[in-house]
Length: 280
Image 1 (spheres, one colour):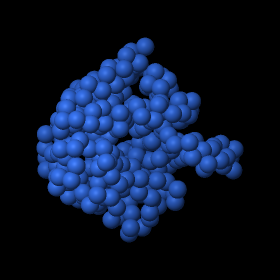
Image 2 (cartoon, rainbow, N blue to C red):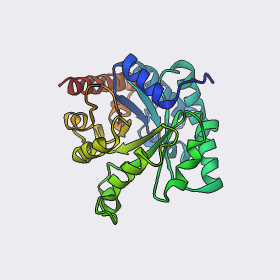
Image 3 (tube, rainbow, N blue to C red):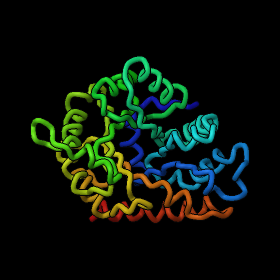
């Protein structure tokens, strides 16, 4: 595998500049939604994701495979093969393993090894519910990105994330402060903030400065592109600071043999809409 010597944040800065894009394509390969020609095929999941990656690689700043979609199909080997393909062909595009791990101690050490050594990802998503103990093992891997859940795009996130801490601030803002200040010992921490809550994106941005934000929730989840980009923008640096993910809207743009070409059309339209919003 061709390893990139740059840190995750350096890779992002380079990708935002060279690609002119804040779009991230997420790989959530649902076996029931694959084109018929690939359903039941031994490496159908890999081929589906590979073809979409090849069709969209010039349009994105990152790729984000979702671990559960591969593991549930016993397709971990296909995930390894996909990330090798991405790193070999597109070493300038960072790969985020979306696994939302949240354990501690030696267990977290092994989850970090899984993400960074087995799969070769440049960054991984983690759940901070158990505190810094869940973050620290990933920070030991020099240059690797650690993307902490902060204000998630799902409605149920408010059950906990909006609870006030002892200082009177919502829990998600407390997480943002910890991530930006106390926890970020490697300089490679980012945050997940959902596009479905642009007001919260703006509040997080005000706390974390130019820290990268992974923003799911556009496309199938209905997040507004203009509101998202306006809320998450970095003053003086348009077109940077955000990794704005779309998965299903791109992956399943067509159910036919033209799935990759159709995915490219949607990805290009989304990339262009993000560019236009950043330019306003």
